Amino acid sequence: MDLPRIAPMLATPGALPPPARHAEWAFETKQDGQRAILYLAGDGTLRVRSRSGEDVSAAYPELLPLARALPAGRAAVLDSEIVMLDEDGRSDFARLQPRMGLAGSPARARRLAAREPVHAVLFDVVFLDGRLLTGLPWTERRQELERLALHGPTWSTPAALVGHGEAALRATREHGLEGLVCKRITSRYEPGARSRHWIKIRNMRTADVVIGGWLPGGGRLSGLPGSVLMGQRHAGGLRYVGSVGTGWSESERASLARLLHAAEIEECPFSEVPPVAGAHWVLPRLVGEVRYAVRTSAGLLRQPSWLRLRPDLTPEESAADVE
Image 1: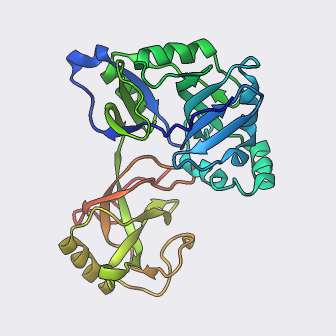
Image 2 (image 1 turned 90 degrees about the vertical axis):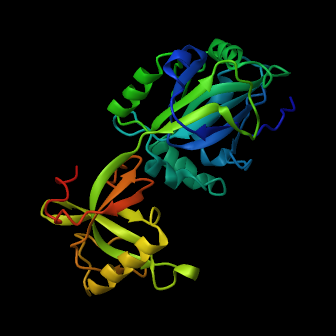
Image 3 (image 1 turned 30 degrees about the vertical axis):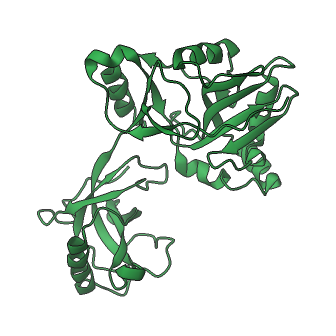
């Protein structure tokens, strides 16, 4: 069957709806992976397309059996997030990254899939058995999706909670999950649109970090830090936990540049030299506070944003040893 190409509907960043309206919304865990539209043609084949429309099927060979999870002759287009799960069952984008971009290297993708398979989280059906479902409300599409009963070794259809938004958001925070997606239960599927009928809430954390180096900016930032290299105390040393390059005003960046130039040293202050080229090392005495989404399994802070310098803290006082 010829299947229609459908661009994924996108969520708008925001906050929980008013509590009195929570019965009008469904709440789903926000996953930290690669958005993908899955095309099951009903002939035992599966095509996986990224958000941009690129065919990335060869990058995820372990998902191919999903094509046979539907009875022969049934065709569907599913919306999903491809994730890599950690030991606690949470999506970990850093683990997924080596698999992304392997559509042109199927042999390598097969080797990686055999060692550590990805998982497709299915959350919408937009075409089924010759019918385009984008005009149906979320509740009806959800019923169609659940009737398909798609649960397998590398795919699943997690439950969605209608109402109880505060409890749902609190649960994601308590379990260290990336966040929550709120979907109006009457919402139609809007291909390619960023809609207010879907709202995404990202759980953000804060951390104190020690600056151990910086990377020069380009263009108008020439001579200024484009990003700084962050560390946290661990086992008596300074462990690299990533870089941050957003969150400064122009005056703050210029002020930080003066402090960094004054603190430059020859040797790397981190316990292990970070895998970055062109770094300028500094005496690890400046402490800052950053906001970030999650800590990866490698200990890096994902999606950090600079908040402020912490002149009230010494590097030794900045934080307890990282995990």
